[in-house]
Amino acid sequence: MKPKFKMLLACVLACVAGVSVLTACAPVESPADLEAKARAATVQATGSGDAGEILISNLEKAPARADWNARTPGGQFACNSDERFALPECRKVGE
Image (cartoon, rainbow, N blue to C red):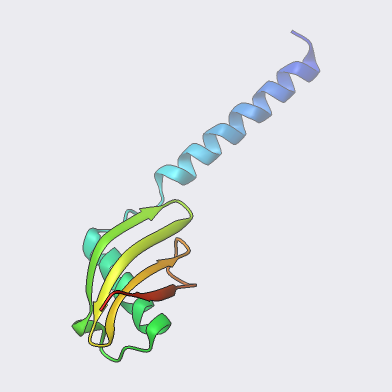
C-alpha cells in the first residue's frame, strides 16, 4: 500500500471510531424524562400555567424532532419541537 493511502485509511478509521464512541456515550432519556420535557415545552408554547395539569400522549422522539399531543386545562394541542424541546410549537385541536 502507498503511504498516503495508509494515512488516509488510518484517519478515516480514527474518525469512525471517534464518532462511534461519542454516540455510545450519549445519555439515554427515560420516558418519564421525555414526558417532563414535553410538559415544560407545552407550558412554554401554550402559556398553560401548571405542568402538573398537562397530560401528554403519543410522544414520539426522533433524532432531530419530537411530536406529542397535550391535554391542558385550556384545551387539547398537537405539539412539536426540536430534539431538545427548546423550540416548541403547539396548535389547538378539537374541543
